[in-house]
Image (tube, rainbow, N blue to C red; front, side, top):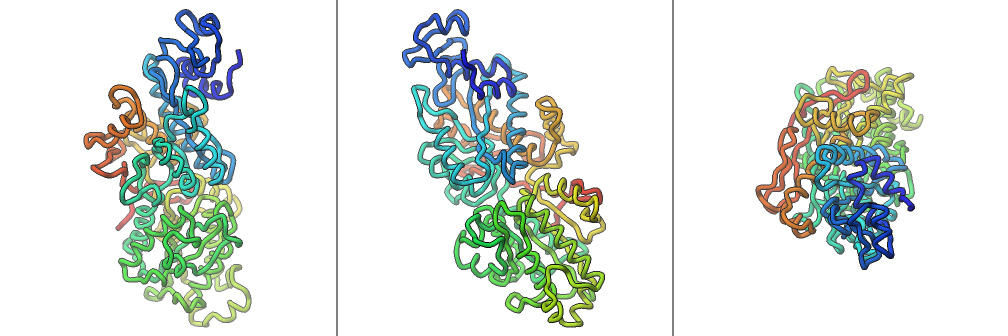
Length: 517
Protein backbone atom coordinates (compact mmCIF):
# COMPACT_ATOMS: atom_id res chain seq x y z
CA UNK A 1 0.00 0.00 0.00
CA UNK A 2 1.36 3.46 -0.91
CA UNK A 3 1.57 5.99 1.95
CA UNK A 4 1.39 9.57 0.76
CA UNK A 5 3.91 12.23 1.75
CA UNK A 6 1.13 14.21 3.42
CA UNK A 7 0.38 11.21 5.64
CA UNK A 8 4.04 10.97 6.62
CA UNK A 9 3.96 14.67 7.55
CA UNK A 10 0.80 14.05 9.52
CA UNK A 11 2.45 11.23 11.46
CA UNK A 12 5.30 13.55 12.42
CA UNK A 13 2.87 16.18 13.67
CA UNK A 14 0.12 14.25 15.46
CA UNK A 15 0.84 10.51 15.50
CA UNK A 16 -0.91 7.46 14.11
CA UNK A 17 -4.25 7.98 15.82
CA UNK A 18 -4.70 11.45 14.41
CA UNK A 19 -3.81 10.34 10.91
CA UNK A 20 -5.88 7.18 10.59
CA UNK A 21 -8.79 9.01 8.97
CA UNK A 22 -6.43 10.79 6.59
CA UNK A 23 -5.04 7.45 5.39
CA UNK A 24 -8.50 5.93 5.15
CA UNK A 25 -9.63 8.70 2.87
CA UNK A 26 -6.64 8.13 0.56
CA UNK A 27 -7.04 4.30 0.39
CA UNK A 28 -8.88 3.35 -2.79
CA UNK A 29 -10.64 -0.02 -2.80
CA UNK A 30 -12.83 -2.38 -4.76
CA UNK A 31 -13.71 -4.84 -1.98
CA UNK A 32 -14.23 -4.86 1.79
CA UNK A 33 -11.42 -7.36 2.21
CA UNK A 34 -8.85 -4.82 1.04
CA UNK A 35 -9.92 -2.33 3.71
CA UNK A 36 -10.14 -4.99 6.42
CA UNK A 37 -6.64 -6.15 5.57
CA UNK A 38 -5.26 -2.64 5.81
CA UNK A 39 -7.23 -1.29 8.77
CA UNK A 40 -8.65 -4.28 10.59
CA UNK A 41 -12.06 -5.83 11.07
CA UNK A 42 -14.96 -3.49 10.45
CA UNK A 43 -13.30 -1.47 7.71
CA UNK A 44 -15.39 -1.52 4.55
CA UNK A 45 -15.21 -0.33 0.96
CA UNK A 46 -17.71 2.44 0.27
CA UNK A 47 -19.50 3.00 -3.02
CA UNK A 48 -17.23 6.00 -3.53
CA UNK A 49 -14.29 3.60 -3.93
CA UNK A 50 -12.55 4.55 -0.69
CA UNK A 51 -12.14 2.72 2.60
CA UNK A 52 -14.17 3.59 5.66
CA UNK A 53 -14.03 2.51 9.29
CA UNK A 54 -16.91 3.20 11.62
CA UNK A 55 -14.43 3.65 14.45
CA UNK A 56 -13.07 6.74 12.73
CA UNK A 57 -16.40 8.16 11.71
CA UNK A 58 -16.39 6.99 8.11
CA UNK A 59 -15.30 8.92 5.08
CA UNK A 60 -13.68 12.30 5.44
CA UNK A 61 -15.90 14.86 3.73
CA UNK A 62 -14.66 18.41 3.14
CA UNK A 63 -11.73 17.72 5.45
CA UNK A 64 -13.92 16.56 8.34
CA UNK A 65 -14.89 13.24 9.92
CA UNK A 66 -15.89 12.29 13.44
CA UNK A 67 -12.24 11.48 14.08
CA UNK A 68 -10.43 14.43 12.50
CA UNK A 69 -10.62 17.91 11.03
CA UNK A 70 -8.03 19.03 8.53
CA UNK A 71 -6.85 22.61 8.03
CA UNK A 72 -4.30 24.06 5.65
CA UNK A 73 -2.10 27.12 6.02
CA UNK A 74 -0.82 28.91 2.92
CA UNK A 75 2.41 30.73 3.68
CA UNK A 76 5.94 31.52 2.58
CA UNK A 77 8.09 28.53 3.50
CA UNK A 78 10.89 28.91 0.94
CA UNK A 79 11.12 32.63 0.18
CA UNK A 80 12.28 35.84 1.80
CA UNK A 81 9.56 35.76 4.49
CA UNK A 82 9.90 32.11 5.45
CA UNK A 83 10.62 33.14 9.05
CA UNK A 84 7.01 34.32 9.28
CA UNK A 85 5.52 31.38 7.39
CA UNK A 86 7.48 28.78 9.33
CA UNK A 87 6.78 30.53 12.63
CA UNK A 88 3.02 30.56 12.12
CA UNK A 89 3.02 26.92 10.98
CA UNK A 90 5.11 25.78 13.93
CA UNK A 91 2.81 27.56 16.36
CA UNK A 92 -0.40 26.10 14.92
CA UNK A 93 1.06 22.60 14.75
CA UNK A 94 2.40 22.83 18.30
CA UNK A 95 -1.06 23.74 19.59
CA UNK A 96 -2.68 20.92 17.61
CA UNK A 97 -0.07 18.35 18.66
CA UNK A 98 -0.52 19.23 22.35
CA UNK A 99 -4.27 18.80 22.10
CA UNK A 100 -4.01 15.55 20.16
CA UNK A 101 -1.64 14.07 22.74
CA UNK A 102 -3.96 15.02 25.58
CA UNK A 103 -7.07 13.70 23.79
CA UNK A 104 -6.02 10.58 21.86
CA UNK A 105 -9.59 9.29 21.70
CA UNK A 106 -11.08 12.59 20.61
CA UNK A 107 -11.30 14.31 17.28
CA UNK A 108 -7.77 14.93 16.03
CA UNK A 109 -6.59 18.22 14.53
CA UNK A 110 -4.47 17.82 11.39
CA UNK A 111 -2.70 20.84 9.91
CA UNK A 112 -0.77 21.01 6.66
CA UNK A 113 1.08 23.89 5.02
CA UNK A 114 1.35 24.88 1.37
CA UNK A 115 4.27 27.06 0.26
CA UNK A 116 3.33 30.12 -1.81
CA UNK A 117 6.78 31.80 -1.54
CA UNK A 118 4.92 35.08 -0.81
CA UNK A 119 3.70 35.12 -4.42
CA UNK A 120 0.03 36.17 -4.68
CA UNK A 121 -0.44 34.21 -7.91
CA UNK A 122 0.71 31.02 -6.21
CA UNK A 123 -1.50 31.80 -3.21
CA UNK A 124 -4.56 32.11 -5.43
CA UNK A 125 -3.77 28.82 -7.15
CA UNK A 126 -3.09 26.94 -3.92
CA UNK A 127 -6.29 28.05 -2.22
CA UNK A 128 -8.26 26.88 -5.25
CA UNK A 129 -6.53 23.50 -5.10
CA UNK A 130 -7.15 22.77 -1.43
CA UNK A 131 -10.74 24.06 -1.43
CA UNK A 132 -11.90 22.60 -4.74
CA UNK A 133 -13.94 19.40 -4.82
CA UNK A 134 -11.92 16.64 -6.46
CA UNK A 135 -13.90 13.50 -5.60
CA UNK A 136 -16.66 12.19 -3.36
CA UNK A 137 -14.80 13.40 -0.29
CA UNK A 138 -15.23 17.03 -1.32
CA UNK A 139 -12.57 19.61 -0.65
CA UNK A 140 -9.26 18.76 0.99
CA UNK A 141 -9.33 21.41 3.75
CA UNK A 142 -12.24 22.34 5.94
CA UNK A 143 -10.65 25.72 6.62
CA UNK A 144 -7.60 27.84 5.92
CA UNK A 145 -5.90 28.46 9.28
CA UNK A 146 -2.68 30.24 10.20
CA UNK A 147 -1.86 31.54 6.74
CA UNK A 148 0.55 34.43 6.33
CA UNK A 149 0.76 37.57 4.21
CA UNK A 150 -1.29 40.59 3.17
CA UNK A 151 -0.91 40.64 -0.64
CA UNK A 152 -1.21 36.86 -0.60
CA UNK A 153 -4.36 36.80 1.55
CA UNK A 154 -5.86 39.46 -0.72
CA UNK A 155 -5.32 37.11 -3.67
CA UNK A 156 -6.96 34.25 -1.79
CA UNK A 157 -10.00 36.18 -0.59
CA UNK A 158 -12.22 35.87 -3.71
CA UNK A 159 -12.00 32.06 -3.57
CA UNK A 160 -12.53 32.04 0.19
CA UNK A 161 -15.71 34.07 -0.13
CA UNK A 162 -17.06 32.29 -3.21
CA UNK A 163 -16.56 28.79 -1.78
CA UNK A 164 -17.44 29.73 1.82
CA UNK A 165 -14.24 28.47 3.39
CA UNK A 166 -13.44 29.67 6.93
CA UNK A 167 -10.32 31.87 6.83
CA UNK A 168 -9.07 31.91 10.39
CA UNK A 169 -6.14 33.37 12.32
CA UNK A 170 -4.18 34.77 9.38
CA UNK A 171 -0.84 36.45 10.04
CA UNK A 172 -1.97 39.74 8.56
CA UNK A 173 -3.36 42.92 10.00
CA UNK A 174 -4.40 44.24 6.59
CA UNK A 175 -7.53 46.28 6.04
CA UNK A 176 -8.97 43.94 3.39
CA UNK A 177 -9.42 41.34 6.13
CA UNK A 178 -11.14 43.93 8.34
CA UNK A 179 -13.94 45.43 6.33
CA UNK A 180 -16.56 47.61 8.01
CA UNK A 181 -19.09 44.85 7.40
CA UNK A 182 -16.94 41.79 8.09
CA UNK A 183 -16.68 39.05 5.51
CA UNK A 184 -18.58 36.06 6.79
CA UNK A 185 -15.64 33.70 6.43
CA UNK A 186 -12.83 35.92 7.77
CA UNK A 187 -11.96 35.71 11.47
CA UNK A 188 -8.92 37.48 12.92
CA UNK A 189 -7.09 36.61 16.14
CA UNK A 190 -4.55 39.48 16.08
CA UNK A 191 -4.68 43.26 16.15
CA UNK A 192 -4.66 45.17 12.87
CA UNK A 193 -1.64 46.75 11.21
CA UNK A 194 -3.50 50.05 11.33
CA UNK A 195 -3.73 49.84 15.12
CA UNK A 196 -0.05 48.87 15.33
CA UNK A 197 0.97 51.77 13.09
CA UNK A 198 -1.04 54.19 15.19
CA UNK A 199 0.43 52.80 18.42
CA UNK A 200 4.08 53.17 17.42
CA UNK A 201 3.50 56.67 16.03
CA UNK A 202 1.64 57.83 19.13
CA UNK A 203 4.55 56.58 21.21
CA UNK A 204 7.00 58.68 19.21
CA UNK A 205 4.72 61.68 19.61
CA UNK A 206 4.17 61.33 23.35
CA UNK A 207 6.98 59.37 24.95
CA UNK A 208 8.54 61.11 27.94
CA UNK A 209 10.95 62.87 28.09
CA UNK A 210 11.63 62.77 24.36
CA UNK A 211 8.24 63.49 22.77
CA UNK A 212 8.48 64.55 19.13
CA UNK A 213 6.43 67.04 17.12
CA UNK A 214 4.49 65.51 14.23
CA UNK A 215 6.79 67.17 11.69
CA UNK A 216 9.77 65.26 13.08
CA UNK A 217 8.43 61.81 12.17
CA UNK A 218 9.41 60.04 8.96
CA UNK A 219 7.42 57.13 7.46
CA UNK A 220 8.84 54.06 5.73
CA UNK A 221 6.57 51.42 4.22
CA UNK A 222 6.27 48.56 1.72
CA UNK A 223 5.45 49.13 -1.96
CA UNK A 224 4.04 46.52 -4.36
CA UNK A 225 6.12 43.97 -6.22
CA UNK A 226 5.03 45.67 -9.42
CA UNK A 227 6.98 48.91 -9.04
CA UNK A 228 9.88 49.12 -11.47
CA UNK A 229 12.44 50.54 -9.01
CA UNK A 230 13.80 49.40 -5.66
CA UNK A 231 11.73 52.03 -3.90
CA UNK A 232 10.18 55.47 -4.11
CA UNK A 233 10.70 58.74 -2.23
CA UNK A 234 8.12 61.36 -1.30
CA UNK A 235 4.99 59.36 -2.14
CA UNK A 236 2.65 60.77 0.53
CA UNK A 237 0.63 62.80 -1.97
CA UNK A 238 -0.02 59.77 -4.15
CA UNK A 239 -0.87 57.62 -1.14
CA UNK A 240 -3.32 60.26 0.09
CA UNK A 241 -5.02 60.89 -3.24
CA UNK A 242 -5.91 57.27 -3.92
CA UNK A 243 -7.24 54.63 -1.57
CA UNK A 244 -4.90 51.62 -1.41
CA UNK A 245 -2.98 52.79 -4.45
CA UNK A 246 0.05 51.45 -6.24
CA UNK A 247 2.16 53.64 -3.95
CA UNK A 248 1.95 50.99 -1.21
CA UNK A 249 0.87 47.36 -1.22
CA UNK A 250 -1.91 45.96 1.04
CA UNK A 251 0.54 45.42 3.89
CA UNK A 252 2.34 48.73 3.55
CA UNK A 253 -0.88 50.69 3.12
CA UNK A 254 -2.65 49.10 6.10
CA UNK A 255 0.14 49.96 8.54
CA UNK A 256 0.64 53.39 7.01
CA UNK A 257 -3.02 54.25 7.67
CA UNK A 258 -2.29 54.05 11.40
CA UNK A 259 0.69 56.37 11.01
CA UNK A 260 -1.56 58.80 9.16
CA UNK A 261 -4.22 58.56 11.88
CA UNK A 262 -1.75 59.58 14.58
CA UNK A 263 0.04 62.31 12.62
CA UNK A 264 -3.07 63.99 11.27
CA UNK A 265 -4.57 63.98 14.76
CA UNK A 266 -1.38 65.74 15.88
CA UNK A 267 -1.92 68.42 13.23
CA UNK A 268 0.22 67.30 10.28
CA UNK A 269 -1.45 67.26 6.88
CA UNK A 270 -1.43 63.79 5.30
CA UNK A 271 0.23 65.08 2.15
CA UNK A 272 3.09 66.55 4.18
CA UNK A 273 4.21 63.27 5.75
CA UNK A 274 7.73 62.39 4.55
CA UNK A 275 6.99 58.90 3.20
CA UNK A 276 9.38 56.60 1.36
CA UNK A 277 8.98 52.99 0.32
CA UNK A 278 10.83 49.86 -0.76
CA UNK A 279 9.70 47.13 -3.15
CA UNK A 280 8.16 44.07 -1.50
CA UNK A 281 10.55 41.09 -1.19
CA UNK A 282 13.53 43.38 -1.87
CA UNK A 283 16.21 44.18 0.69
CA UNK A 284 17.29 47.32 -1.16
CA UNK A 285 16.27 50.40 0.80
CA UNK A 286 18.75 52.92 -0.62
CA UNK A 287 16.04 55.18 -2.06
CA UNK A 288 14.30 55.48 1.29
CA UNK A 289 17.55 56.03 3.17
CA UNK A 290 18.63 58.82 0.82
CA UNK A 291 15.24 60.53 1.14
CA UNK A 292 15.50 60.37 4.94
CA UNK A 293 18.92 62.02 4.99
CA UNK A 294 17.87 64.71 2.51
CA UNK A 295 14.91 65.39 4.79
CA UNK A 296 16.94 65.72 8.01
CA UNK A 297 19.53 67.82 6.15
CA UNK A 298 16.86 70.33 5.09
CA UNK A 299 17.03 69.53 1.37
CA UNK A 300 13.39 68.49 0.90
CA UNK A 301 11.50 71.74 0.46
CA UNK A 302 8.07 70.21 -0.25
CA UNK A 303 7.64 68.46 3.10
CA UNK A 304 9.88 70.80 5.09
CA UNK A 305 12.54 69.85 7.62
CA UNK A 306 12.34 68.44 11.14
CA UNK A 307 12.62 71.16 13.75
CA UNK A 308 15.23 71.50 16.45
CA UNK A 309 14.24 70.59 19.99
CA UNK A 310 16.27 73.09 21.92
CA UNK A 311 19.75 72.68 20.47
CA UNK A 312 19.21 69.05 19.45
CA UNK A 313 17.86 67.42 16.33
CA UNK A 314 15.78 64.39 17.27
CA UNK A 315 13.54 62.51 14.88
CA UNK A 316 11.50 59.33 14.78
CA UNK A 317 10.87 56.84 12.01
CA UNK A 318 7.59 54.90 11.92
CA UNK A 319 8.15 51.77 9.85
CA UNK A 320 5.95 49.20 8.07
CA UNK A 321 8.53 46.72 6.73
CA UNK A 322 9.33 43.03 6.90
CA UNK A 323 12.53 41.89 8.60
CA UNK A 324 14.82 41.74 5.55
CA UNK A 325 14.05 45.30 4.46
CA UNK A 326 13.93 46.58 8.04
CA UNK A 327 17.44 45.21 8.58
CA UNK A 328 19.10 47.04 5.69
CA UNK A 329 17.14 50.21 6.41
CA UNK A 330 18.02 50.28 10.12
CA UNK A 331 21.67 49.55 9.37
CA UNK A 332 21.80 52.35 6.79
CA UNK A 333 20.16 54.86 9.12
CA UNK A 334 22.52 53.98 11.99
CA UNK A 335 25.57 54.20 9.71
CA UNK A 336 24.52 57.54 8.26
CA UNK A 337 23.58 59.04 11.63
CA UNK A 338 26.94 57.97 13.04
CA UNK A 339 28.69 59.82 10.21
CA UNK A 340 26.67 62.98 10.83
CA UNK A 341 27.44 62.94 14.54
CA UNK A 342 31.12 62.94 13.63
CA UNK A 343 30.59 65.95 11.36
CA UNK A 344 30.96 63.88 8.20
CA UNK A 345 28.53 63.44 5.28
CA UNK A 346 26.45 60.25 5.33
CA UNK A 347 27.09 57.85 2.42
CA UNK A 348 23.49 58.31 1.29
CA UNK A 349 24.11 61.94 0.23
CA UNK A 350 26.09 62.91 -2.84
CA UNK A 351 28.92 65.42 -2.64
CA UNK A 352 26.73 68.00 -4.34
CA UNK A 353 23.90 67.43 -1.87
CA UNK A 354 26.25 67.71 1.10
CA UNK A 355 27.65 70.93 -0.29
CA UNK A 356 24.11 72.32 -0.52
CA UNK A 357 23.36 71.78 3.18
CA UNK A 358 23.22 75.02 5.17
CA UNK A 359 26.31 75.33 7.42
CA UNK A 360 24.18 76.01 10.49
CA UNK A 361 22.15 72.89 9.72
CA UNK A 362 25.35 70.88 9.38
CA UNK A 363 26.32 71.88 12.88
CA UNK A 364 22.99 70.77 14.25
CA UNK A 365 23.22 67.46 12.38
CA UNK A 366 26.00 66.52 14.80
CA UNK A 367 23.27 66.23 17.48
CA UNK A 368 21.06 63.89 15.41
CA UNK A 369 19.33 61.13 17.36
CA UNK A 370 16.91 58.69 15.75
CA UNK A 371 14.25 56.51 17.34
CA UNK A 372 13.02 53.76 15.00
CA UNK A 373 9.70 52.03 15.61
CA UNK A 374 8.32 49.20 13.48
CA UNK A 375 5.15 47.14 13.44
CA UNK A 376 5.25 43.41 14.13
CA UNK A 377 6.18 41.82 10.74
CA UNK A 378 9.75 42.97 11.33
CA UNK A 379 9.44 39.99 13.63
CA UNK A 380 11.93 37.91 15.52
CA UNK A 381 14.17 37.92 12.44
CA UNK A 382 15.08 41.63 12.72
CA UNK A 383 16.76 40.99 16.06
CA UNK A 384 18.57 37.95 14.66
CA UNK A 385 19.79 39.87 11.61
CA UNK A 386 21.07 42.88 13.56
CA UNK A 387 22.80 40.67 16.10
CA UNK A 388 24.63 38.84 13.30
CA UNK A 389 25.64 42.13 11.66
CA UNK A 390 26.85 43.55 14.97
CA UNK A 391 29.83 41.19 15.03
CA UNK A 392 31.62 43.93 13.10
CA UNK A 393 29.33 46.95 13.48
CA UNK A 394 27.42 48.28 16.47
CA UNK A 395 23.85 47.85 15.26
CA UNK A 396 22.55 46.78 18.64
CA UNK A 397 21.02 49.96 20.05
CA UNK A 398 21.33 51.31 23.53
CA UNK A 399 18.53 51.34 26.08
CA UNK A 400 19.04 54.88 27.42
CA UNK A 401 16.25 56.48 25.44
CA UNK A 402 18.07 57.52 22.26
CA UNK A 403 18.67 55.61 19.05
CA UNK A 404 16.09 53.05 20.11
CA UNK A 405 14.66 50.30 17.94
CA UNK A 406 11.14 49.48 19.05
CA UNK A 407 8.77 46.89 17.59
CA UNK A 408 5.07 46.56 18.30
CA UNK A 409 3.80 43.03 18.84
CA UNK A 410 0.35 41.44 18.87
CA UNK A 411 1.20 38.84 21.53
CA UNK A 412 2.77 39.23 24.97
CA UNK A 413 6.46 38.68 25.52
CA UNK A 414 6.99 34.99 24.60
CA UNK A 415 9.62 34.49 27.29
CA UNK A 416 7.54 36.28 29.89
CA UNK A 417 5.85 34.85 32.94
CA UNK A 418 2.21 34.88 31.83
CA UNK A 419 0.34 31.61 32.03
CA UNK A 420 -0.18 31.66 28.28
CA UNK A 421 3.52 32.17 27.57
CA UNK A 422 4.38 29.28 29.88
CA UNK A 423 1.88 26.98 28.16
CA UNK A 424 3.11 28.06 24.75
CA UNK A 425 6.75 27.35 25.53
CA UNK A 426 5.87 23.92 26.93
CA UNK A 427 3.82 22.99 23.86
CA UNK A 428 6.48 24.23 21.46
CA UNK A 429 9.24 22.31 23.25
CA UNK A 430 7.15 19.13 23.19
CA UNK A 431 6.44 19.60 19.49
CA UNK A 432 10.04 20.37 18.53
CA UNK A 433 12.72 21.04 21.11
CA UNK A 434 14.85 22.75 18.46
CA UNK A 435 12.35 25.57 17.94
CA UNK A 436 13.02 28.88 19.69
CA UNK A 437 10.00 30.60 21.27
CA UNK A 438 9.28 33.88 19.54
CA UNK A 439 6.54 36.34 18.75
CA UNK A 440 5.54 34.70 15.46
CA UNK A 441 5.18 31.09 16.61
CA UNK A 442 3.42 32.40 19.73
CA UNK A 443 0.89 34.07 17.44
CA UNK A 444 0.44 30.82 15.49
CA UNK A 445 -0.06 28.92 18.76
CA UNK A 446 -2.79 31.36 19.83
CA UNK A 447 -4.57 30.99 16.49
CA UNK A 448 -4.37 27.20 16.80
CA UNK A 449 -5.69 27.16 20.37
CA UNK A 450 -8.63 29.38 19.54
CA UNK A 451 -9.43 27.27 16.46
CA UNK A 452 -9.51 24.12 18.61
CA UNK A 453 -11.94 25.80 21.00
CA UNK A 454 -14.18 26.94 18.14
CA UNK A 455 -14.39 23.43 16.68
CA UNK A 456 -14.94 21.74 20.03
CA UNK A 457 -17.68 24.15 21.05
CA UNK A 458 -19.58 23.60 17.81
CA UNK A 459 -22.53 21.37 18.60
CA UNK A 460 -23.69 18.63 16.26
CA UNK A 461 -22.07 18.06 12.89
CA UNK A 462 -19.11 20.29 12.12
CA UNK A 463 -20.25 22.35 9.14
CA UNK A 464 -19.25 25.81 8.01
CA UNK A 465 -22.58 27.28 9.10
CA UNK A 466 -22.39 25.61 12.51
CA UNK A 467 -18.84 26.89 13.04
CA UNK A 468 -19.81 30.44 12.07
CA UNK A 469 -22.72 30.27 14.53
CA UNK A 470 -20.27 29.26 17.27
CA UNK A 471 -17.84 32.10 16.52
CA UNK A 472 -20.69 34.61 16.22
CA UNK A 473 -22.19 33.70 19.59
CA UNK A 474 -21.67 36.64 21.99
CA UNK A 475 -20.59 34.17 24.67
CA UNK A 476 -17.66 32.84 22.63
CA UNK A 477 -14.47 33.81 24.44
CA UNK A 478 -11.14 32.01 24.88
CA UNK A 479 -8.98 32.97 27.84
CA UNK A 480 -5.42 31.79 27.18
CA UNK A 481 -3.92 33.72 30.10
CA UNK A 482 -2.25 36.23 27.80
CA UNK A 483 -4.10 39.28 29.08
CA UNK A 484 -7.37 39.99 27.32
CA UNK A 485 -9.27 36.90 26.10
CA UNK A 486 -9.76 36.27 22.40
CA UNK A 487 -13.40 37.12 21.71
CA UNK A 488 -15.54 38.42 18.87
CA UNK A 489 -17.85 41.20 20.05
CA UNK A 490 -21.28 41.36 18.49
CA UNK A 491 -20.92 42.00 14.75
CA UNK A 492 -17.11 41.97 14.90
CA UNK A 493 -14.63 39.45 13.57
CA UNK A 494 -11.73 41.07 15.43
CA UNK A 495 -10.61 38.64 18.14
CA UNK A 496 -7.96 40.93 19.61
CA UNK A 497 -7.25 44.64 19.86
CA UNK A 498 -4.17 44.18 22.03
CA UNK A 499 -0.84 45.72 20.99
CA UNK A 500 2.25 44.99 23.06
CA UNK A 501 5.76 46.40 22.90
CA UNK A 502 9.32 45.14 22.57
CA UNK A 503 12.66 46.91 22.42
CA UNK A 504 16.02 45.75 21.14
CA UNK A 505 18.61 45.69 23.89
CA UNK A 506 22.34 46.21 23.69
CA UNK A 507 22.76 42.52 22.80
CA UNK A 508 20.17 42.74 20.00
CA UNK A 509 17.66 40.56 21.82
CA UNK A 510 14.12 41.71 22.44
CA UNK A 511 13.11 42.95 25.86
CA UNK A 512 9.62 43.60 27.10
CA UNK A 513 8.48 47.19 26.66
CA UNK A 514 5.37 49.30 27.24
CA UNK A 515 4.38 51.93 24.68
CA UNK A 516 3.24 55.39 25.72
CA UNK A 517 0.24 56.90 23.99
